[in-house]
Image (tube, rainbow, N blue to C red):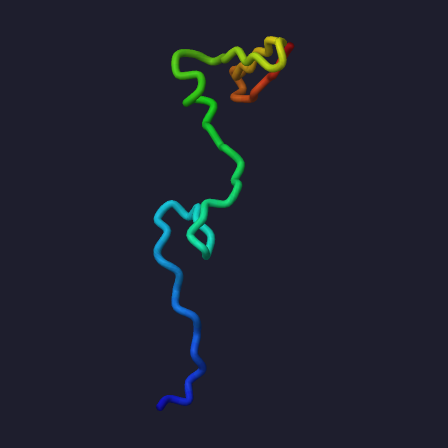
Length: 67
């Protein structure tokens, strides 16, 4: 018998890094690249509670949200 302390087994590998120790996916924020949303240009239009918003990327690569 070994006198070495026993450690819990390593959790299974998680290639995307999103699962916790019990194997569940925690409630993570949804991160989407702007370029993925605005595939064909530099702006998208967003509807929220009946209001329309415009999110656009400037020449300086900043985002501006207007109502």
